[in-house]
Image 1 (cartoon, helix red, strand yellow):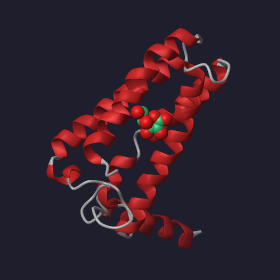
Image 2 (tube, helix red, strand yellow):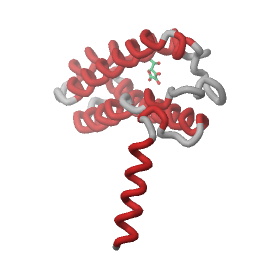
Image 3 (cartoon, protein in one colour):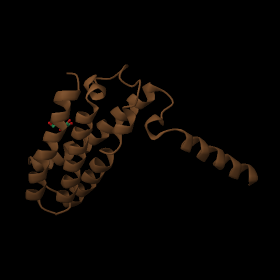
Image 4 (tube, rainbow, N blue to C red):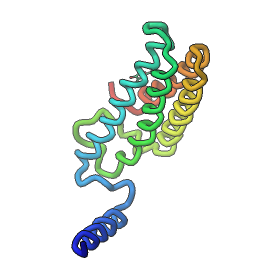
Length: 150
Ligand code: ASC
């Protein structure tokens, strides 16, 4: 019991010692993490798109569940763009670090758009989903155009 408590204490101390941006052992881990969060986001965003564009029938429960995942994922990638993560298996452009205020603004806009999408997805009708999907997709594209290599 004592051992367990001291282990927990040691883990907490370690977690608190590492700044939020640096909670990855290696740059490669941060790159994998941010790509994974974007991949999961895209999969669930795509299902909302399929509904918004009439490729699959509107399903209120499915819309809500997918939008929740998109909203949660949208919070995750940003902490994984720390120092030294500009090189490796990544299409991230140098502008992310060179124009970090502009990048943050684009990231914030995307998160705001997907929060609105989540609210719309919970309205229980296709028209609300359609109205919010376009701006959310545009917020993805804006960022890709400026900050992601082809
Ligand atoms: C998607 C997806 C994106 C965005 C973007 C919108 O479904 O994977 O990255 O939409 O293409 O323009």
